[in-house]
Length: 304
Image (cartoon, rainbow, N blue to C red; front, side):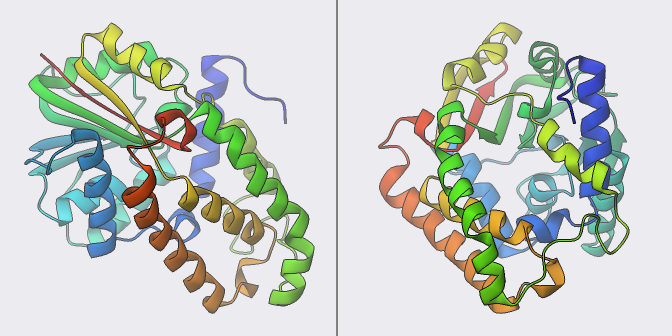
């Protein structure tokens, strides 16, 4: 499929892809709602802050997906209330199902990041994970984040791909792609079906995954729309290097196989190995190497 070239095309592709992806999103990315998930989310925010996490008050999550950030924060008592927004109706439905299962009350809106149905200065914190690189107009979006934040309110975004980190990550992805036939033979796994067996989408819908990413960032480029919107104390940090290489290798292998044939022992190895390497990255590499070399960038800022 040809990559989208206009803002409307980008929005349409992202909505259709994420509607399909919502069905298996939590299992694909190993999303946890519990102590592990809460530790991951708060750890990311504390890296940006450089200090323990304060009470986040009323938060709005942009591109909430199934609720990885916002539901974990609410479940762990790090915020008072949540407004969850996403352009994808399918993701909103998935988040609402997770909130119901976790007995959490969340306000939801299906809307664009640049047009939030919220009053001026009505939230304490704006958060998001792996969403900015999908947005066609970052300047308009950051202006909207600034508008809805109270004075002194904070903004946090994580999971944004760095331009250099993305290029580096192509090495383990490519190696895993070449090794995939041998890996499937060892796992005794059939090749992945063209469409999900559960009927969650067509081959065309899943091919959209190659078209939904609009940006990969250099740290300066990520900070510029925040500064232009009027934010201050803008900081960009990097996270995940070894964990990212490990994770992309495993996800690339798994994507070539029928999910039903991937052994649980492999899934446990991949999940636990990723968590272990996150700790290695945090202890030895993050904060010591340039932010641009890491796959994920995180940004924090404050409204005056």
